[in-house]
Amino acid sequence: MGQAIPAIDKGGTIVVVGVFGSRPAIDMARIGEHELLMIGSMMYRREDYETAVAWIADGSIRTEPLYSRHFPLERYRDAYRYIDEQGDQAMKIFVDL
Image 1 (spheres, rainbow, N blue to C red):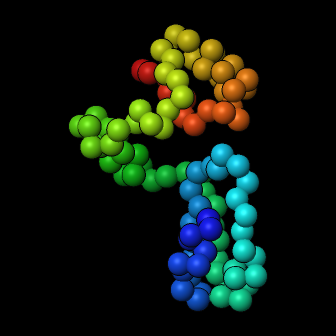
Image 2 (tube, rainbow, N blue to C red; image 1 turned 30 degrees about the horizontal axis):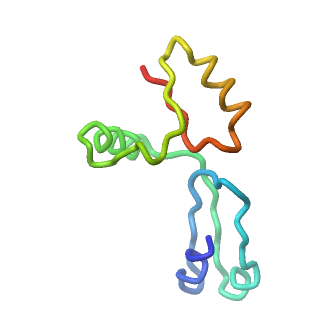
C-alpha cells in the first residue's frame, strides 16, 4: 500500500485483492488530496482462476514460498483447525483434491 498510493495518478483507482499479514499504514491525506478511489475485493473472475491454475500446473508460478501447509482432502477439518490455531502466522493453506 505504501508504494501503490503514491504511484497512482490523481483520480485513479487502487483495487486491493486479498488480505494483509498486518494492518498497512495508509496515507489518507494523499488519498483525499488526489481523489483516489480504493476498492477492496476477495474475489476473482473465473478466467483469472483458470489462468492461475494453468500457471501453477506448468511450473510458471512456484507456490513453495507462498504456502504454509498442504492437507489431503480427507483431512480438510485439520486444515481449518490449523487456520484457526495458526492463522496469524500462515500465508496459504492448500487442501489437495
